Length: 500
Figure 1 (cartoon, one colour):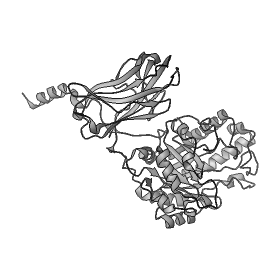
Figure 2 (figure 1 turned 180 degrees about the horizontal axis):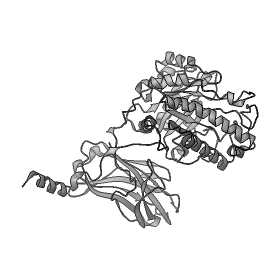
Figure 3 (figure 1 turned 120 degrees about the vertical axis):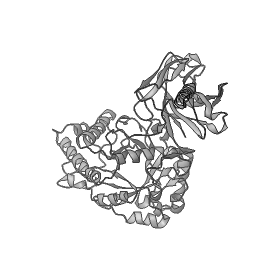
Figure 4 (figure 1 turned 90 degrees about the vertical axis):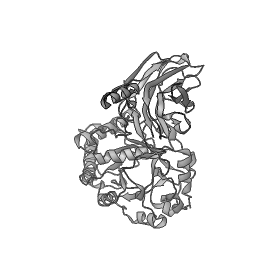
């Protein structure tokens, strides 16, 4: 028999062992036209919590560009800790001041230092404490704007000034784009509080203002260097009420000032939105005291493990002006500027590869115990645009989505999948799920254990080190188990089936 014919028969017998190409596990920003550098930065950030070692990027605020910005406090932090933070940022606004031309209150002279920092291997972020567009001279940062909807109407004086503010901001961001700098951009933050003019507004109007800004910067101005951050305040409620939607946000965060960081509220709410999570501002609740900053690193590791970065404020809130700054910035979990390597997309156990992402296809997955499906849908996705969905009867006890195919998982450490269930139907005491494989001719079952799932993202993990015949996996899938007191119809979803 000729070698080519023998290889063909062998391939047919083993189903070729490569039913689905193994691709790099990529997490993409919402703007599909983002620059490659911006895509690389976002992908690297999104993978940080899954690393076995250093996994949380540090950050530090340099001040307001219209007054007070400098690198002096950054240098003090470096002197105290021996580390440059991974992210350095400034604020284009000076919302407390007034001027006959309020657009002059928006200033991006800090760009020069941001470019240098980025070129030296760091990342940068920009905030804007905007002056109130409801005032002819700006200012009024801490006075609620009563005609907030006018921001969407350029024929009003408020709307015209807001448009001028956006244009001035876009000019600064364009300057950074021209220099090849990706910007972690956090506009209209702490919107659930009542201390800024944009705070405590009608949620629907706020969302429309955000979407209008996103579309103007992205589609009209072509600012493809932005990573968009939605950041409510941890100390107030309604943290997700103003969320404009997954198509307009890349990272969700919390601004949190606390002397006991492990008790900060809102983490689960924000993580459930399905985006990378950050502490977009942190510090002690009061200044003038010797706060132990290692409380923050301990809280992030033990209570908030999905955190991709933190951003410490300056002045009295700075780590350098409090206790244990060195131990904080040199914690083994912290990634500082010297540790940034955008090409190293590593996770615990090694590099992660995507087995099934369901982009435009069910990839040949099947189902049992379901009332419909499975289908590739755009209703939800852990990354990309699609996931795998099946309708289920909650009174059915269990439902399984699975793939019958040969997979050689030898040398791999873990199989993972992101799952969730729909919000409809009576879930009773809750739904649970487990990730499994069947190996060898006897189809021996191994699973990662049954854990609770919700309408938010849950990552299922199967440790492969203890299974027999990892080179001969015949089936893999997820079994969903419904509660005995559940009833009605619902749906289940799977995305990002990865191997590492």
